[in-house]
Amino acid sequence: EIFINVGSENGVHEGYRFGVYPATDRADVDRDQRIAVIEVRDIIGARVSRVTALFGGGQIGIGDRLELIGAEPESE
Image (cartoon, rainbow, N blue to C red):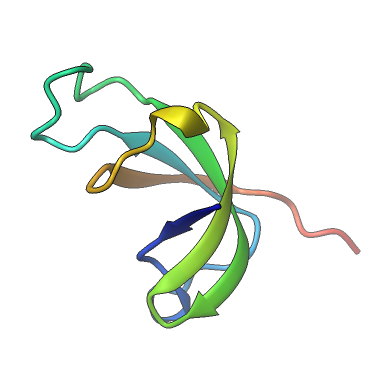
């Protein structure tokens, strides 16, 4: 399972997608290269959400940076 420190307090909703970029102190990867894409599956609290990796989940580390890249269209 993957959790992020972004939640309801930040206005995040299920289906939001984020690009994941390496933390600035990681020397093993290019800091400007996106290493994963995640999608919010469950808002747990004000500052915590459960996400699913759409790709690259095994490369995510503590302190990596998130950038909002879109939201999955809501189904009717």
